[in-house]
Image (cartoon, rainbow, N blue to C red; front, side, top):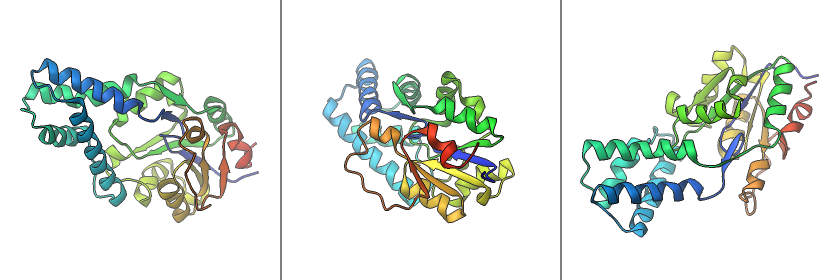
Length: 247
């Protein structure tokens, strides 16, 4: 029997995942429509190129952990890149487009998610989320979990757009663990990313579990290489309690 008191989960590709390109295509469609209606139509190829540059800017912030890069930041960059005359109404509508896409995009749910969470809760463990937020804000991510009926399974959340820090920084994990009143050595973290999830958990002495089920389902696992840093690797969340030796 394990002595673990808490388990934290990554969000993207651990709880939910998009099929590659889905949200970007939806965002491009919305921008095409909004800009045309505002009398500022741009070529789709130009919008797509601007979005690619914008995502590079987000990743620079993510990798260097030098502050969040928000939908508002994105709109300011994208409209400058595209030469858009940005009034207040158009600015607000373009910012809101990131929320709208995040709320309506079809997402893949990790197989066995509800069963896994129920088993962990029944065993007396407290649960949290430690998530690096991209361009879909934490209120939208919470709403997606609420629609699935699993939001209440979690006791605490550490979303980077609220904490101001990305994984693998220890502060990202401590924002959840300290609220739970749990030492890192008494907790496990589940995620798909070795650089952020596994490295960050290992550095704190948490049990680290790399979950690759959603990467496999969405086709992203092909071609990826891993350094074998995780304590455990699983493909199905229903096996997590057993992997952690939780009855």
